Image 1 (tube, helix red, strand yellow):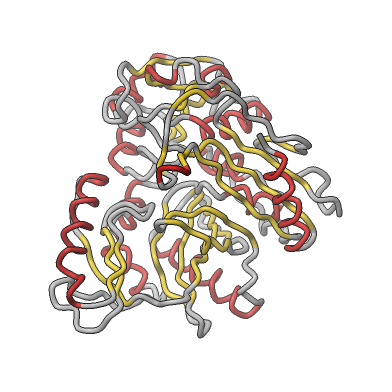
Image 2: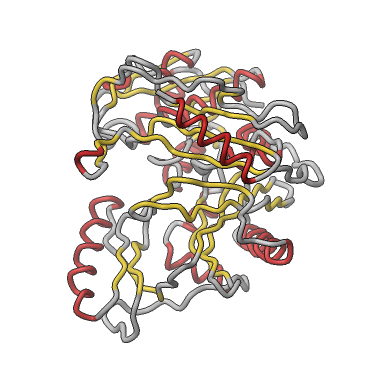
Length: 412
């Protein structure tokens, strides 16, 4: 059983995992780079270990140093959060080799889904629909979308609408992919205009049971990065939902998955869907699934890592949840990330923080905040600019949207 957990991450996700640990009686260990010495996630943990330096490569991407920190702090398990090393099978193997419990999927399952081109082949072999892969040097029909084989978050992605645009777009995508992921491999696929981005949360235990939960719609994006997420999707009905969930569960079983993960799809206007990628970790938008299913996904991750079985079936979905991501950006500079002192951060009338919605099955809208910052924090230019997520749940989509809009309007 897990008695003390190190979170190999920072900010909002570290605080989110620590909140579940407090409720379940598990001790906590934070790691921190020098710019994060006074960060809320450090203060929230029972113990904290410094990772000297500021750059991600020296700190939150330094697997050897993080494993050493876990051992030095007496942790017996590691949760990777999301970002940084969360989808690195090499880091998972380092954790396991040190005799620690890895709160994540088996490294072999991570390997199977680590690169989009390889993941597409596995999905195709499992009978999950995929778009055709196009040779970037021999594209004949446009528009197409260039994608990085490694990584995500919109990096290395370019939409191309004609042959004259292709050479420069390929060169730019490869440079960005190489800088972001250390791998400049890219591929092309047909660009489906007007398609929606939907994804399915899966959970799988060590005994082979697999849950596929109500889909999330992540179609509101900017620069190919998600901004607004909701569950369920207004574009998905019961029959399509059954097909989506079945496809996600099928792929999870095909790769021997365990833990929490997300299978992402592109949903065409025709109602057909196509596999995009399998994220072998918890997603930023997991709170909307928690709200509609009345679940604690982090608690379930911890249970699975300890060998406990999933219940026979998940709670049915109730109502609607919408999440908005809040960023430190400069509107006068094209909404580019910016650092500096956070002088004020307040969202009035919250009902929950880092937790499930109150009164399961109730009728009153709920407003939840998952935040990585507090007033007075210094926002570092070294890390992602996301500050927090505001999530609203209500019995209907319209009521959830109103609650979220009101919460954002009154936030300071």
